[in-house]
Image (cartoon, rainbow, N blue to C red; front, side, top):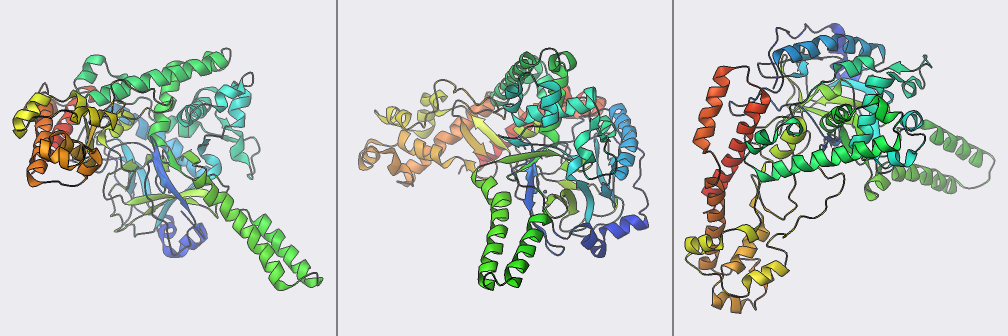
Length: 590
């Protein structure tokens, strides 16, 4: 991922060893828990058990990881030769590394506990990440961050009162209705360019004037190598229409959102923050946030203490029986659990969080060695090692969620080689060359088939639908045929092609009902359907402007030159990965 530096892992101190040990873990947390952001999993954990995440990753916190992983950022583990893509220059990585000195000091001063890891850069073509300064065992907690130091927003109901007061007092409704990534962009830009003091972070602390966020803001990337900054000619080099359409949609929606906010606050928001500033904040939010279905607060002992006192008085004064007192206490406990963990899932409330220091952790599609969790009882977030642990000097990776290369490139600026979550979106069946399919299968498409498939919605849409204003992920708005590395072609497509390529006898036996082709009807029909899919994929691959061999040779040349911009090499890596996925699917169709 990023450029190599001479930074070596520091020798572990006694403090490092103590923090990661099981004994000190008890004092650190008596109970614990981690799209497009990363995904975190919000859960309660004892000192001997941990809730492992299932990702949405979105830090979309996602960008969630154990909140479902919060969705969002750098490269996955050490890249294979195919995916080792330069996304930041040596000078920019070195500059950021220098800026993290003040950030780590700030972290210590503000009660962020960390040991056993340090921020550093790895091998050539890599950026900053978290590296183990000592061997870490599974469940060792290496970072703990108080919630008050994080930036967060809940969707769709939450808003920041400080941002509203300072920037949108004249028209608060526009700000309150902003999507999560826009709301986080506003917070990031406010602390980065307007006022670095976070008043809320002083709550419960000794300094009521607040905490300066400048050292954290200074440690963030200033530029991103994502396609939204590419020229049309560079986007065309992707040789992949869905990604080009997704980036165009992203650009349009982000500009519309900025214009809406600027119109609502022309003298404050628009005068202080440019569109480029807003885009920087959106990219930072999309690539560093974690997300999860949680909207409750941290553990609050006051209601439980109050219940305890009331129960004691209830029994001591002889007002009622112990069973009645127990029922009342149970009602309070159940209500708290319902509020914090059940209702948010039922109401589909998502919390998006950007967490200092933890947001330095990078992504790997398979084999994550770290997990982010929300500590319910200590009101904070933690990063802990997973099985089988982390060796000294190795980078600690988390998983942003099941991200395909479309999402990784669009929002994080990298491509993962042999990504198990990758997808390919073929044109919808209505755009396929029916004559070529008939020739490949040795069958003719009979009357009535296309009309039936069209009414069933299996040919794709003629026109694009109007997407949600927050839907900026890689688009499939024309109902293209989805191919995944994990499961292959969508079974509904195979069903459609069984009907499309059916003989007159098979069509009549089915009662001319598409639903009766959900399972194999005959060996000949199955072969024809699969031959049709195979032919469509072969035509898609053959229609590319370059071959796989040409792309591989071009990558060798670019890497040999050195110092090549990400904008030059990423499109080649991306399109080669897509072609590999197509080739694999073609080879396994029979």
